[in-house]
Length: 175
Image (cartoon, rainbow, N blue to C red; front, side, top):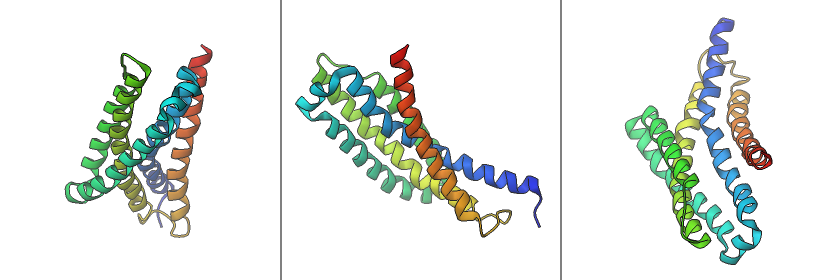
């Protein structure tokens, strides 16, 4: 029988592994709100960049999932999570710093950064989710509740990322 402290530690580690998914929800949710607010739907529709940015982010996510699934198996989950976090931080910053001489130039730069950001976002799935899943199988976790904790940890983090992705631009716009 495990102690209460051991159970809390195990569940908190599941949530720690799932927190990487917060940035995934945030990165995927924030782009549409910001672009529509800053440039308007007409400027985006003229070049179909709303769809392009979403598609490139998704394509990067797929590339990140496949490549980091392999890399994290070969080099370890810690390497995968650290590299994924570095990629997300770097290309989130570069996405925010994107500029161009025209709206079309800015959106082209942003499209490239979103693809590369998508690789980092995709990398967090095979590293963070698998780590959370492995942690849910620890001896201190009740076998009847292990899947509940895993689903709660990962899904909650992604959902909160989407919520914060809507709130941050709203708050910044109102300031």
